[in-house]
Length: 389
Image (cartoon, rainbow, N blue to C red; front, side):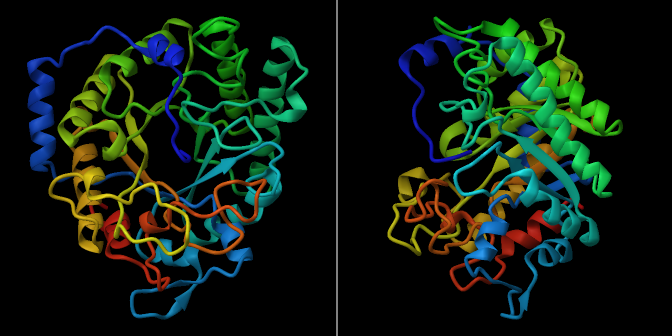
């Protein structure tokens, strides 16, 4: 996830698929999810903490609800968070989100008993449905060279984690790759792209590297279409037909972009049955206020962006996470693994903004963090770690 922009018209057309209606079974599943009747727990109750090292270096502090200061990782563990998601860039301008930065963070997570979820972007900066820019160092490589670079980069990072005794538990090969990765060669749409054959070669290289370095790891392919069944079916049908061997279907699901809970429930139920794989919501979030702590206009700043029944309050944020947990718990066959809250520790600190190349850029996410403007843990953190544990 990053500050969202709209796909180009060509991309939107290429990513469209025939509308596939929900079956009666799917409608029933959506209704069951909305009611939250299933009582089983979730294996994954995670939080993306990629911004933590930079935030701490800029003076961020984290507190329990009573105001007592604590280590951010230990606070997450205290509340029962099971996994921490760490994005990896290749050579970013600010030097964060690299192998060098995640290794010490992984040690902290290991000591706290939190599983490690590695999210490869294969870029020097944000990768998402509208941005999949090759690392500058890979710019002159042909398709074979890019395939080798994906393999070697994945091997390097995961191998280093394993050697220091903190092997990854989950690995994403690509981040929100609706339109592919390593553009233009790895685009799965449009003129000048390599199409699905080239994208599949890149993904196979990453998946093989993950398994070679960390034999017990679970691999994930992640797109941002939590409420869009047509695009989801199109994408994973192509992935399967191209022989991609992966373990988990990952979806971003933000209600302000991806639709209501019932639609998402139907989509995830369909995907888990259609491909006989578990599903996880790799990203979600909700605001605890519409106010902003800095001068940057936040992504969520208007009542019109909210979901009915979930106000932008600490309780509304907590209630949203309960609803997402219920959605996952009700995926048929126990195939809903859980969910991950995106950048829950990214509080406002000058110098830790959106643009890694611009230290003056602001944070447009602080009103969606799991810590309030006084740095205190919000009720949603207790829900994240403890509800359906």
